[in-house]
Image 1 (tube, rainbow, N blue to C red):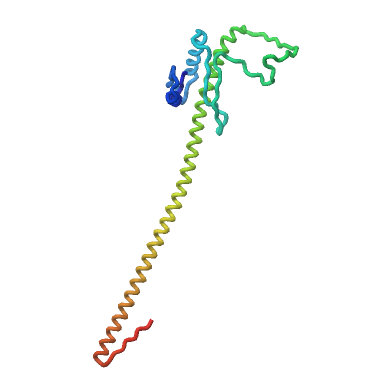
Image 2 (spheres, one colour):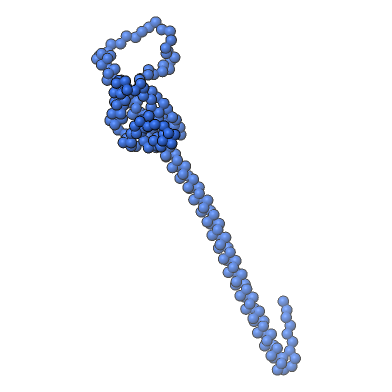
Length: 212
């Protein structure tokens, strides 16, 4: 098993799968040249008989909201599926097209087949990177939206608490002013009563009447 990137290594080690090679030099922007070298290495090993096949597992990008795990056979190359249904076992139509090749078919295949392998592997790399960036973008957008909602909720709670505190302070101030006014009023009554009592002692019996 060959692994590209760090997350795959963590998953394989956690599940105790043996890792043959870890390619950590590609980064977020792998070049076509670097991927081509890796594809050429697989082709050389396949032609030498060291490996029987090469299967690539990657995250295929379908849309911004959809990505899925895809498995493709890189080597040996498989012919594409015939969408018209004329696969193996189909009856001949009675007409066979004849083509002339220049240069020869062998020379064309020697050039096109390796390039097909390189392009297929590079496409897998590109899809995996785009899928990762899209997943990060979606996660960051969700986190931003949640943070905005949380900020609004906290602001609302802060305003309510501040309003409650201001109301409490105003109530205390008004209550204190009323108590002070009542105390001054009682003090004035006490002084008036005391003056009348003294005046009664000097000139005769005094009388104090409380009303209210």
